[in-house]
Amino acid sequence: MIIRSLQKNLQQALERQPAVVLLGPRQVGKTTLAYQVSEKQNSIYLDLESPEDLQKLSDPLLYLRTHESQLVILDEIQRVPDLFTSLRGLIDERRRKGRPAGHFLLLGSASLDLLKQSSESLAGRIAQLELPPFTAIEVAQYGQDFMRLWLRGGFPNSFLEENDLFSFEWRRDFIKSYLERDIPQLGPRIPSETLRRFWTMLAHVQASLLNASQLAQNLGVSVQTITRYIDLLVDLLLVRRLQPFHANIGKRLVKSPKVYIRDSGLVHTLLGIKDAEALQSHPIMGASFEAFVIENCLNCAPLHTNAYFYRTSAGAEIDLLLEMPDKSLWAIEIKRSLSPKVQKGFYYAQLDLKPARSFVIYAGHERYPLAPNVEAISLYDFLRELQQFESLQG
Image (cartoon, rainbow, N blue to C red; front, side):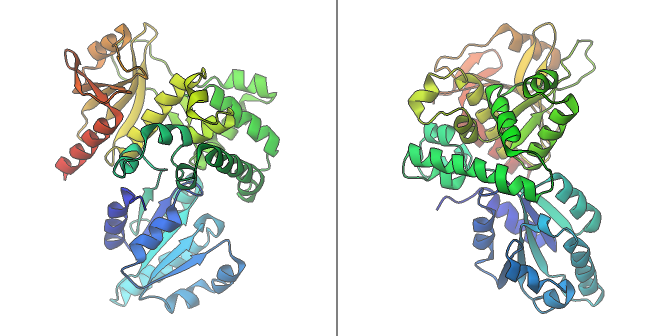
């Protein structure tokens, strides 16, 4: 069993707030984590995709009042958004009577609408956390291979499969299930084959600047439709838009975001990459590694960290710029090479922004100064730096 880094934060959130919503794509391990944190307390689990469990909530206040001493876990909460109003009433009712507010752990697979509904209905009563796929720092604790995580991605069933072929087949079925079952259930009526083609197109341009016009032309749809498709995949926590950093420094800055599929294993499946040898020889290797590193960094960054990239028309560029909770800037360049070199664009960007710390994350293991104020570092060691920063912040 790989212990998730989020477990401690989830336990603390449940102690602090009467309701916690745990977001994450399907099959990322939300239910497993919920069971782990509920083992030491009296709890009840309801799957809102189950007709039997859903029927129990035909009168939610009546049912939940009978379990007010328990931790109530409600899975796939986005299926029944009206429950938020009932939960608010129940929490407030208990507070007025001077009783403990009770605890609700809400698990959801879609973010934007769910966050809006929960924040409006349960303002001041709810904490929000996101569970990503496995990170490099989680699997490294158990001696797991870094290359295996990059190739297979971090979905637990994919990562832990017996071999690469079984992992590839699991991810292929996962994509098929999302296209044919999950997305239609969430409302959008998009032909599954059209969305598959779009998803595959995103894999081909992994970690590049968004060119909605080109994508629209290739798919034979409007730019507005492309934006709607991206919004959907972002909402499902499967795609990330990394925004450019804007600063008043008198430079012409790139305005388009970078877009990438968040799980590297899904990228490789969409492109038919089944094993490490195929990945090493594929043109997507560099972009895949960059997106893999960025996603790990963002999943391990301290709370309230803001993430950007930086690029100017003059050639200054930073792959990942982290604005830390104390407002300091950390500049990160990403290199797949075992002997990384800093490009001129990174130095120009440093002169523009004057970051507090600068790193080149590369595929090796040794940590050493690469240039004045620039340190070469492995992904694992950099993630440890993020953890240490968070612990020092208290």
